[in-house]
Length: 526
Image 1 (tube, one colour):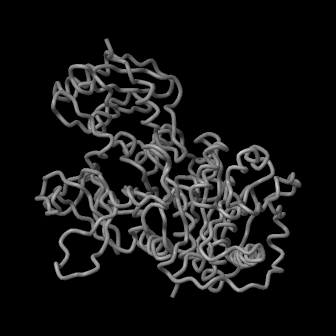
Image 2 (cartoon, helix red, strand yellow):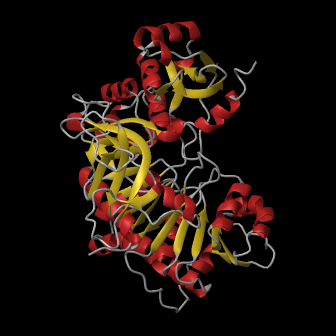
């Protein structure tokens, strides 16, 4: 039975060696070829004397080498650290210093930009360069070509690893301060793959499009859920959303997962018939999907099932709403995924009554191992699960999400807000999601973010940053009028700020609320 993360592709190679595993820019790699390259890369890492649980950073766009490197690092008994390719050299160097990276896998082009910052990474001793172009030497680091890494000449045996050992460190986008490294065990990642592929009903003939960054838990999940059942993954580094629609049609994609800002853009495009015929399901993660966007997608893709999901990197995925419930409760985040329990509790840990807001607490096999090298933040978020027997000497640790939700009489959950995004105005606590939902329902906005901005009288004033839909003219007064007719006075925005194009994104593709809030500081100062 598969217990280690690299056993997912290796197991599928045993069952169906000739089935396609990866597709990238017209190139195709079957499971047998993928498995061989993973084993050879693991051998190459061991020949570089990679120690047990030492970190291997992968700073590449989505391509075959990126996938081979992360699973090869795990197969060697190391820990992989996928680094978002959108990050700048200083950000990459911070991550590498923070988790003491020993080996870096990157391209010649990226290495050239990153080289000046590598001197600040004292634990780094080798660089593996993917691609055909030779790389310039950097200091005293061992420089290894991709072909050398795959030569399979290393004779050292992989380090002994069990399912509770570290497999990966995924860095959050850093919405508050520096990015935090979430430590994931093999058990976490394998349990996540099994759970998600179970409720999505993934099967070997699925063709999944990998549109999200592999450094994002939901992005990496596209690989693990596919490899769990022997499905294929098409890797794409899209420039514009239209590229995704084109890829769905060309590769007959059956499954696509994205974040709300991307779905908002995709919902405004025309989908060719080939895409409508092939796409079995779509899934949303990384924030609430506006109902107006969901309605547009369901109209454009009438044969496609829509799954709404909620999760956080610290526990990967917590809930999902099955397509059969969309019409009855489109604003729900559903119930706990298989092999997890989700609780709604008060500050003292006692369970909330139906309809009573409380903190979402996740317990089960997907709870990660905490934050790398940060005991204080780990202690804040990872605490004993509520309701355990008092005689239990070593209590089970759960993730206390910091997110406020409520549960209805039938057990379905509804997201209210993230603790650090809640707006406190005129003595009231306002969820930005409620304000945004009213604006999306107008059909006038493309994207919108409601923010709390310091105000001398109100504490915080609600400011909305919005873009027009399809380049149409947008009138701030009209939006405010709609808000006044659908919201109580204390929830009506004090100001609407119109922006051209798209709102700024963080590296995971979500709207960068922190940046927008920083831009608004001082707006209401005398």
